Length: 411
Ligand SMILES: *Cc1c(COP(=O)(O)O)cnc(C)c1O
Image (cartoon, rainbow, N blue to C red; front, side, top):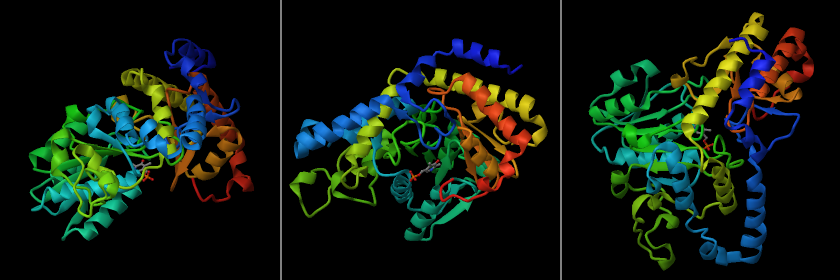
């Protein structure tokens, strides 16, 4: 590919999502390559939050639980996520954070497997997944966490494996696991599966039902554009729902919370995985973020993501080839998610110099430059310009200036 600016503009002319950018509030002087970490603000969310605060909270007050269906929001919004991940509407619930949902589902899944003691995952999984599994294992009887490199996971499955817990798309490398064969292998070994879709939902096509997945979790504030700290979602396969219990048996997951009984009776279906009163404003922020997906074909999203990636790689090779950036994301589209990562020894100051020039990507320790390629609001010209700026920063070595070395609390 010859990655000229004209070529990028020609790709924009043919882009079916070109008009979508107008549905987001993005500053003109920013190229936003961090939608994999915090999605951009949809314009619809400004009006929806205004309504949620002034009318629903301000005027309707507590009546909103019924009149504005606040009480039904976790299930209603879950049903809107379902088509993006190949689930049935009643198999998805919006609640809590990814971390809390992991904890609930790890405990629930292992309790179905009382004679097995092993939770299988991989080293380098997202930290909260590993930490939560360790915390859960500490509460269970004699459970052990076993970590195996990606290629060895299927072989590591055995009669002791209670649960295989994996993140579908790796947060650093962007590498994607093959969900269906791994799930099938787990089932053949008698294990259950829990997939973390934080970097998949809204980024690439996912088909949980076709893959036979048992449990899943995912993030609301990344590709789903739900807003900072938006609640997460969880998925439980239909036929398992009546068999599992949440270890956080709060009143919102009770069959009849407003009967205020002393004894706990789990709600039917997935609602039993609610715990306490939900953050209603954040829930409604996620709902308006999701409204941008209601008419979206995820295959077309993935096609554009792949084309953005190809342009990025071609342009980096041409423009920055001498600067030692090492691509660590698989170049085959089916083997990755929707971000691109390079390794470079000076990734931190380079990421800071990029931000100063309006190109917002991020840094992942110890040496990774990561760029989210979100098809709904990025143009091919954005990609071309971002790499041009990266090239200028590398050529000039401006990143060596002292102000870029300063550490930050959040990277
Ligand atoms: C972003 C992300 C999370 C986030 O967890 P929170 O509890 O929402 O902070 C968890 N797992 C993975 C794989 C992620 O990428």
